[in-house]
Length: 283
Image (cartoon, rainbow, N blue to C red; front, side, top):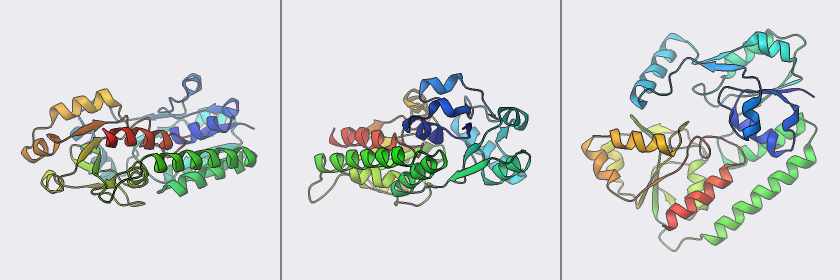
């Protein structure tokens, strides 16, 4: 079976199922496990990731207005790779091929591959997507075992970090200019790690809020986990924030988390994210 993955989370799921040798192509952002970096890249992005976050946000807004997808697909390369299965997503059009792009890709391929579309907004949804990938790869038993192991680890984290009557309030930011509150599965991770999410709601999309609103929340901990960026980039972005209300907020206890590796990818490493959050909350 030949598999092409169009998003990092799917690549990590395939690897966790022990099926990395089946991958014949991956997206431009697939960097884990390290072996995936040697595979052919079937997508590329028009965005310059070195730009300040405000310029990236403006570029994305312009792309939405014009209907220009920020991620391009190398259809000829994918056709040459002859995949039996393509793993895609319909959650976000920013960093991966979106639903419409996926449909156009499949329409151009002969024979038509089996398409598995991931669309999780919650932890249960992520675990369900793991089972969905397992079924597509005829690895149902492996998927069941993987999901059981992840659920066990989440239970252990919850028991080890059970909060008192008043859990510490935690604000998780996935973007700083403009500020975005992390949503989807992140509030669940915060709760499992022993905290109370100050602004996000489980299963809801990430939302932008003003620095004044966020500062008024007075969280016990601010976690900066930038979507698509590592800790070093988060430090750069933090240093560039000058808004007065933002500086008040960021003058509180702040923790950094590699959002690119952990919180932004709906795959097995979300459990690692819960462990990291538990350490940050515990101080």
